[in-house]
Structures are given as structure tokens and as C-alpha cells.
Figure 1 (cartoon, one colour):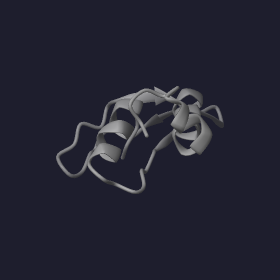
Figure 2 (cartoon, rainbow, N blue to C red; figure 1 turned 60 degrees about the horizontal axis):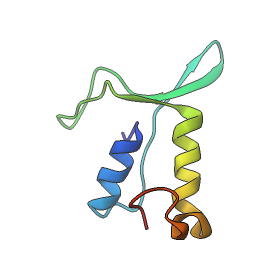
Figure 3 (cartoon, rainbow, N blue to C red; figure 1 turned 90 degrees about the vertical axis):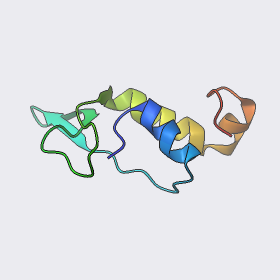
Length: 76
């Protein structure tokens, strides 16, 4: 469960090669990345991120030209 941009960076810095996002739908439309309770693995699961912002960030850090430009902060 990696449901905000800070957590994406945190887990990538730890060496993970994949992230799992939980998508919350409101009125049949995807709205945000959010898990909520109950939570496993002794994690804090109440953080969330606007889904468009979350996916745009993932797109940027996985597009070599954009990632190499430094546009997305410390991600390489």
C-alpha cells in the first residue's frame, strides 16, 4: 500500500521495484489513492493522494527523458 507521493519516494529509495496503490472510487469514478482501516503490516493507512496527481507523478518518474531532466525532484 503506497498511497501518496512521499511513500512512493520512500519505498523506491529503499529499493522496491513495484508499488501497490489502492484506488478509492466515488460514484463510480476513481478519485484518490487510499486504503484506510483495517490496516496490515503495522502501517499508517489513512494517507491519500489525488489519483490524477499520483498517476502523473508515477508517469514522470518512469519516463526516462522526464526523470533524467530532474523535473521530478530527487528521483533518478
